[in-house]
Image 1: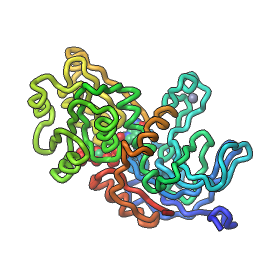
Image 2: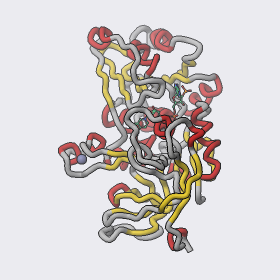
Image 3: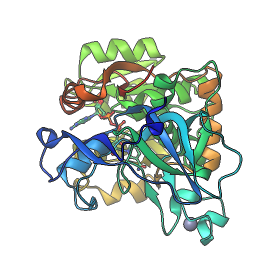
Length: 356
Ligand SMILES: NC(=O)c1ccc[n+]([C@@H]2O[C@H](COP(=O)([O-])OP(=O)(O)OC[C@H]3O[C@@H](n4cnc5c(N)ncnc54)[C@H](OP(=O)(O)O)[C@@H]3O)[C@@H](O)[C@H]2O)c1
Ligand SMILES: [Zn+2]
């Protein structure tokens, strides 16, 4: 008997009933959701953590979920129940979830720019996610997982890989002959960025910054040509030295805070600064003169379109880009998982599992 066949109307979820910090996460018993006609119910196998799960509980100003709220934007599982209008999926199908939900009708959706949708929302941020036994998902957000690909590894892919792909490929248009710098490269988006730059685009020289010598070694093994420990030296000065005072073509910076201006200083004239996050702070001091004197482009990127996620997952399924799963914990051991992320003790992704 599958869990959905059990008569139970409730389910377990790891969430919070008020904002604060990671101590606020608890194992809750909540109502099991019912799929709308165009949705399916997914029996969650695994859900990976993302930094947005910390932002959600810490209540940055744009997070206004209803309570109890549980995150988990990176979801894999089996289709457990079909809404009345769903065609093309069957109970038992193995899936991951495209975390970006869009209306499909606004000018941006019609243009294929789903993450610019006027009614855009994301699992784990605006929608309750996969830190629960079940989640409802619009039919168009389901993506089939190949039979030989395990669901725990698959869960580590969609959100972080989709974000890195859109930023570097669709928005940043990085080229094989370019030099690229990734700031803060050891987390989820960071480890995908390294592999996308190196394994898919085969960029000329790949630079990355990180915070410890162990992490630097890990990044070298992952394919970074030059790793700079930004707790020990000014990375913009090192980049200047390594590029013979030219600067790199592209910087991808999701750290923000006091790395923002140094990231601009690391760019060549006409270089591109890609940004899709601000882990260390969204309101840094800036230097407008650098933008116009060097004629820099600042390019924002958010999550992924349907094309973006289809493209990057092909590279995941064929092994060109591998989810780095540092640790897995059963759902009820969520505290260890959140601590790892909050302590910045990350080498890739951490996954909460419910099934093998
Ligand atoms: N716009 C979007 O759609 C979107 C989607 C996904 C993620 N994001 C954003 O992108 C950022 C990265 O997300 P993620 O899930 O990959 O995060 P993550 O797995 O927690 O990784 C964050 C990495 O940033 C570095 N870092 C630098 N300063 C930090 C600080 N003060 N606190 C914590 N980490 C710091 C760390 O690497 P080192 O120790 O190597 O420096 C860390 O491994 C987040 O800001 C997230 O909100 C945005
Ligand atoms: Zn739309």
